Image 1 (cartoon, rainbow, N blue to C red):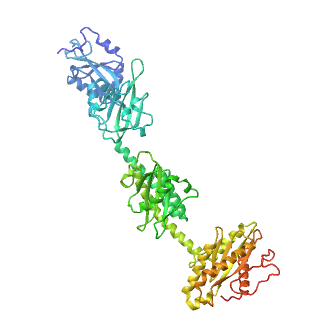
Image 2: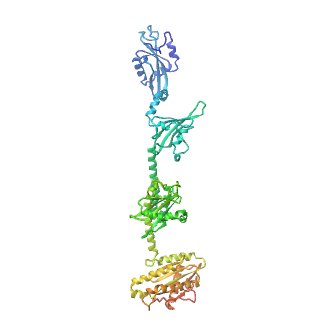
Image 3: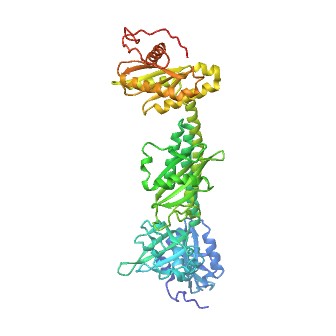
Length: 596
């Protein structure tokens, strides 16, 4: 058998072996080593099992076949052996037994596994083509004009190769996700960059891409080559999870405020802020439904926040709570250049308010007043609708809590029969007013009812309660902003009249006498026992250090002085003396004798 790799007769095989830079061995037909150069001798000292495999390959005639033999060594090293057939020797001059059997010279070259794999891939275009065709990745190449010049046969994100080749990648890039780093125009090596494209079905697709720039013979940029993998499903799942976590975080603010804040108004303020942050809205407002009516009032609104509502939206927002009350889902409206979203709030299955959010409309061509199924047209996403509805669920409980606390406050501050401030609250508020006065004068009108006992005795306590409620209505009508009306107990009432002197205070007392006689007389026990009031007027001068109890006591003294003049009178109480805290000299009080 002829072998082109045989050494010609007469050639100095020994010199060839010793002059070889890599490991070299001489072997007989049985695979036994008959000679070695220094590199080969060093290799023979290694007990890695490679020699047994090489000897068996030679003995089995492998050296007579085309190709090379590889001997793997530790540390990813490989020796590639190229066999050369030597002429048979019959005289044994080369150290053999001289039996005329074939002999071989094996010349080795060191190589690594990584280099062998790289060489194998680059040397076999068919192998590379097969790998591309069976890969699920999207392999591509762009030309100097930036357009696709090659796309792997499987295509990508629903497009066939023919749909992409010749097109510019920017035709498919989604601008809302464009961060300026496009792998299709890579000037430097890029690894694992996310790029969002519009898929064939119109949906966004997220690809993770690595790319290398291509250069021409002149060194100029000639395009890019890379591969992308579709990770849309994984990215959307991650985004959904992030949205869920963000929603939990936002709602956690409301829940923790409901749990930790004593004032439910603070919880409602937080809920209004969460509605803005969670939906990217420009503003929000909360409304509470007045019990027993269809009217709504602002709640949870920081001072001045109502002024930030766009004036052109006020009419729209005024009517939205009623519309939301009749809809299980959020109501969306496009009006006055804004997208508006409203959701009703519930507590124990009853509507008790509404959450309103708004932002400038992205599409100014959207028809005005779209609602219901027009949510998409009104610029709100499904996540926005879901978030606002969830916030509304928490706001409903907060509104109920605010109402309950307001009721408790009313019960603790107000007289249950007349709705006026009770004695404790009157004394507390009077103390605050007196402490804030550093000058000027005001007055306290202290009065009780004339002939009230006859109403209870002759017409019953229900009629008496009607009289007391009528007095409450009278005082609310007479009180100005800044004034203070209250019931101290029984049929005794006070009216704090702010910023008046003595003459003005007496004028107010005269008005009280007239209106009480006119307003209460129909409720009297009879013509001979007409209802009326007796009024004591105590003038307070700011900065004198008078306490609330002293002021009330002086008014009480003035009221009894008026009764001594005859029912239906008013009297100026003794002036306050800062020396004793009692009446001034020359104006002694009289023993209390009351006959209503």
